[in-house]
Amino acid sequence: MKFFDCKTAPSPRRVRIFMAEKGLEVETVQVDLTIGEQFGDEYRAINPDCVVPALQLDDGTCLSEVLPICDYLESLHPDTPLLGTSPLERATILMWNAKAEQQGLWPTANAFRNATKGLVDRAIPGPVPYPQIPALAQRGRDEVRQFYYKLDQQLGANEFLAGERFSIADITALATTDFATRLKIAIPDDAVHTRRWYESVSARPSATA
Image 1: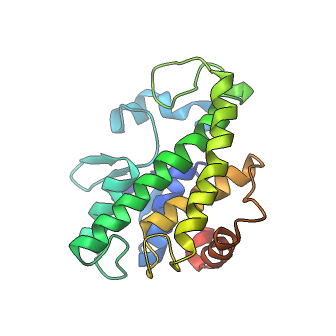
Image 2: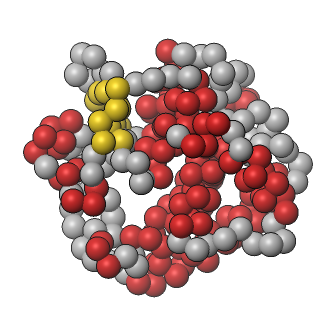
Image 3: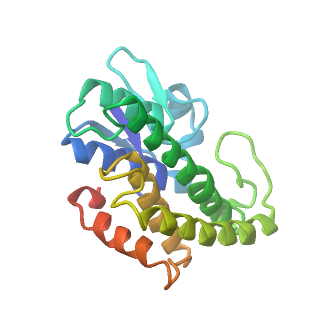
């Protein structure tokens, strides 16, 4: 297998953390997003959506998007389960992973992509150019702050986001929080449970992936 990555992007980092939690080592190819390498013919042949991550299997099949890649790896390597071991646990993890994506990661991406000078015509990832909408940048920042409080409420009664076990939902929320921190969208001082959780998950060895 080959894993197509970009060290500075939050989405492939989620897969790196997932693999690190499982102790997996996969051949990795860096795709330089800063020079538009994802739009070149070579990478388009691998992933026509022109985004990372992507996982190319030995038979040439390409999987894209974080959750399908992680689900495939979990099926091959079920030890250290990160997607649940029962129907209810899996559903709960997937629910919180979706919340972390939709209410956390996507707004952070909006804040970044609609305000960064180098992305004037790249407000949405992929091969089609879309102009920035500056108002979405501020709305994204506001949404992320609300997301921190949603985390705080859930983490007040749970060690981790989907319960008592570290999961892909925590990975998504961690990558989101680090991404937001780069944009100076900090965890509010009064979100004490979110801060406790963030310090805990950031201390895991996989967080350096």
